[in-house]
Image (tube, rainbow, N blue to C red):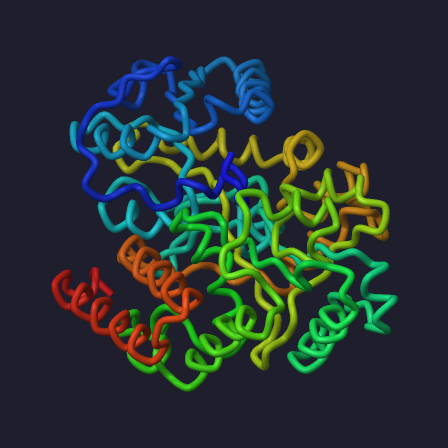
Length: 430
């Protein structure tokens, strides 16, 4: 597990260029789409016993529910999963059913790995939008859950400073957040008023974690109207305001330029009054006597958090697509979605699942905040096959900005690089 991100998000974009067959302790690639009436299912969670156990239970139930098809699970360590899928696609041996991290869906769909899903619309409609992988107006993947970022805070610090406790319905404005940071800093009670969690150097954390602030200011990684340029959105006035705010968190003494390797532990230990983290720390947050999860501030374009986690798809080479679709529809039963929410620190994909899960997910429950926040503020990362280049370029720019580089030059260079990549790749088919 990454320092900040759940396992489901950490290795989001290691897709392009991988060609080597990966042998693993759980399975080996090349088992293909199944033979006779067997449907092979590949999953990334070979190292996550709790999640894998639920997947196996679904498969067991499905296999027992009918006698025409058998689903066979092959689990891979997350670190080698994307490479295994890419290699299998190259050798035309993709499994029938596979999971995919949300940012990879567009790339895999354009590359011809995936088939559009044909699922009952009433089932699809129940899912959070952020759990659906839609590319060029076609549904290619659907998830059992999502993750959610939040400001985890010591409520005592806010109350002592006379700061209003924000809600999903009434989040902080930018001015309110700035005032809160200033009051907490002046109290002298904490080393840092807010820890952004910058100790994680992983590319995807920097995009997943900090691009929502950029989007709240009104900027973005790419112009989503056509996905053909970043000019004006990653280096426009809104993006420059985001960059000034981001660096200003350090220069004003509110946040460290580089956090420790475990910013949440520092929060638990009282070194910071607030920390930017996610639902994967919701359990430990419950052990902090005054711990509370809060929505991000609204910097003018609405509060934003990252959306999109691991989702399920059917390969284009599957010879039994109808059966694969039938399995996926079966697997989306609310009782299974509730199991993921119960056993993992994840947001259930539907209201029905939340109601069944209980354990804090019901209306007024302790975890309910994360479902409401996801429904209101989740912003998918750009849905384009060119996402791997976007995320690496943005992450580098954000790291350089918070380190004190010239923000205008950094953003302009990022735009130049992204636009050159788009041109070299014919806009990735957009």
